[in-house]
View 1: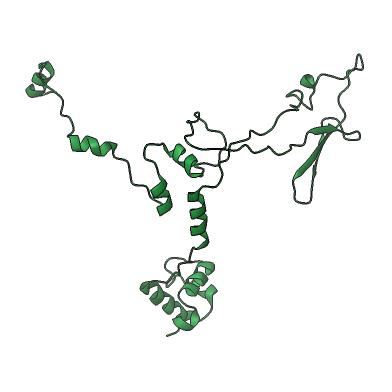
View 2 (view 1 turned 90 degrees about the vertical axis):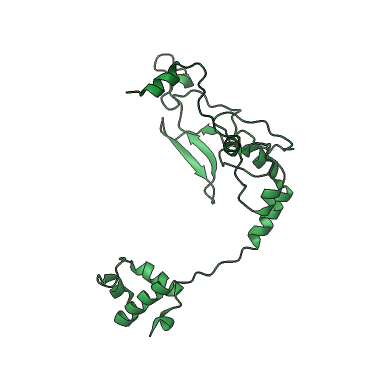
Length: 230
């Protein structure tokens, strides 16, 4: 039940709901910081949407070529059209059973040609049955002018070149085993030596139930059997 104070507030015409302070409402609209390489942070435009920024920087936010909910206008991007690749069309070859087909591939596994069986014949007039009514092609005639949509591709920008340069200079970070992991591995090596299979079967000391492969990787990361022998 509502208390008397709540009833008075409901009847009052001067009561106003508690609103957030100006600083709190401003924090709600505050954009999060851009996390990523310095090149992307410097070139990021906060007045654009995520998709528009990716297009301006020459990046792709998704590998899907078609946008599900429509597309936003691309601002300040000069794109060039890429010619769609030639798509092989189906051809009819005698000798293949009706309703069957054969896919011809090259040495790399790419589809070169598609061969279909002989078309159905009408039992009454001897004429060919319409492709729409054919059981081998119930979807109708093949579309001769069908092709993949050519998506606009922007040339490489300075941001993309900088990201490629950074990716070539990546240094592999060495992984080091922790002090407790080294002590645990030393106890296993002291009991079983180099027999990793016996270490994996040791229920008492292999408390984390590590597999032989995981134990082998852990020993390699710790420096090998020579460093683990006490």
